[in-house]
Image 1 (spheres, rainbow, N blue to C red):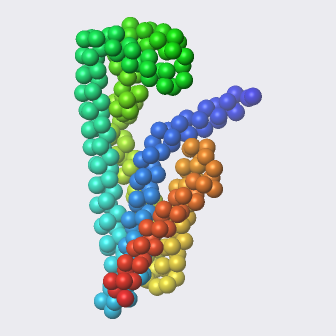
Image 2: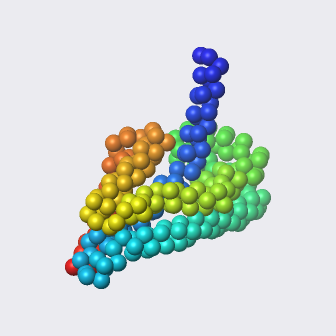
Image 3: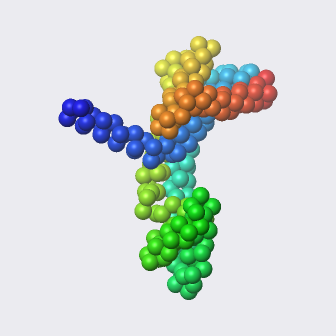
Length: 244
């Protein structure tokens, strides 16, 4: 393998790792952004009231952009605060676990050995592994917390970056459904373009998810399209019901 090929592979793997690190935020923010803005489009398209029809594309743009950025900020800050809260809770539980280990190391060792046993280690090997961990209380506390599903260590995540990625994904994907209304008058063709871009955005999100997780692309795209389409159909029905 040539040096250039190796450098390309390392760069590709680095990009994939970064996507995987923030896949939750990208999918969560992107899907919500698409659904939020297309709900505005579908709601107005489904409405048949005369007043709504007169407002037309201007309403879609104004309400769409207002909701897009307001919800993007809300979700970004929500992700940030959620991650901060989880980290603070983890630190508190870690402190409590360290104190418990110092008070009764034997009990902590037994509990960790039980966790290892449930994961498939033979009893003697599980006990040996737990006793080895007991020599390093901070590591032992992290292991106990991981088995108790108390979250991840704060050092592995950046709450501010999580929030920023969620915000960026929300805005980038959420702009697509209202993009046609920025460049042409509101009519059936504009709505069809918006619908097409919405389906394309959902498919892109599914492809990104499948690429990052190595799962079936068909399954990833189908699930993403299914969830987004269901939300869009509900918005259209409500618009038709209220404005019809």
